[in-house]
Length: 354
Image 1 (cartoon, rainbow, N blue to C red):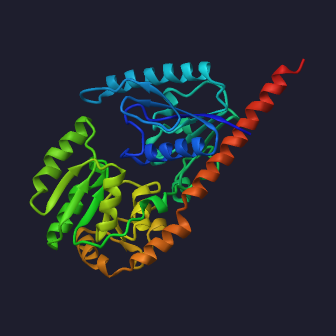
Image 2 (image 1 turned 90 degrees about the horizontal axis):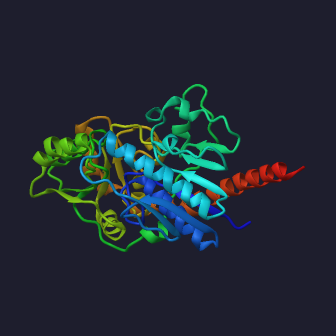
Image 3 (image 1 turned 90 degrees about the vertical axis):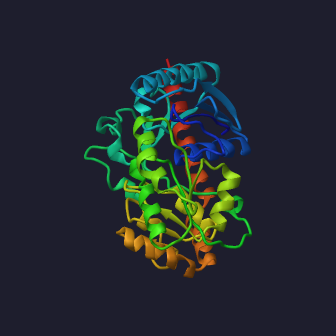
C-alpha cells in the first residue's frame, strides 16, 4: 500500500539532515525513508527546514522565543496542516512536537512520537480518546515513566544511520559535547570536568533564542571557555560526523531524563565511547566499562574522560550495529503507518456503507 504521510515538526525548530535536535533528526530520517521507498512524504516545518519530499513551510519566528512567538507559530502550523490535508490525500499525520496538542487534527489517523520526558507533556494529552490517535515513547525506559491513565502504544526505539556515520579517522585528544545549549543539558559540568583533568573539550550545539537558554550560555558556559575548551556553535551532519569519529569520548552531562539519546547512539556508531550521568534511558544505551562510563559526580566524569581512551572503538561500533539499527526503526514506523492507514480506510468504508 503506497502511503501519503504528513510529518509535522516542532514549530520553532527547523528540520533537515543538519538539524540539531533529536526529534528533528528522526523526522528527517523518516522523510528520506518514505521518499526512498516510493511513498509520498509531506513535511510541515518552519522556514529554514529542508525535506526530501514536499515541504510546507511556515514562518520562522525572529527575536526572543516567548509565549507570544510560540502561539503565533502554533497557529501557523494549524493553518499549514489544514492546507496540506486539503491538498493531498493524507493517510497518516505524524506529529513530533512537545506542543502537539496545540495543533492536533480533530480526526483522521494520527501518530504522535513523544521524543521528550513524559512529564514535560500535559497529562491529559497522554490520554487519547480516539482509536485512530496513537501515542508512543522512544524507549522502554521512557515508557516506564508514563503517568497513570496514559494510553501509549509500544515504544519505537530510535536508530541511527551507522554506515553514513562511519569515517576512517584517527582518534584525537579532545572530548566532545553535542547538545542544545540550555540549563537541563548541564554543559557547564562537562567543561568543569574536562578542565579538572586538562583535557580539551569541544562543544557543538545551538543556543535557541529563549531567554533562559541565552542567559545560561552567557552566565554558565561562556565564562568557562578558554583556549582548550571551545564552543563551535551548531554542527551540520558532515562536521558532526568528523568530530564524533575523532573524539576520545562523547560527554553527556544532561540533568534531564534522556528518553533515548540519539547522539550517544551516533557516537557509538563512530567507535567513540560515551561518558554520561545515568539519567533516563542512558543506562540502557551505554554499557558501563565497555562502551562508556556512567558517572554520578563531576570528579567521576573527569576521571572517566581520561579513562575513555582505554575502551575499544570496534566494540562500540559492534554494539551500535547490533542494537541501534536505523532500518529497524524505519521498519517499525512503516508498520505503524500502514496499520493506522488501514484504520482510516476501514472507517471510510463504514461511513460510505448505506
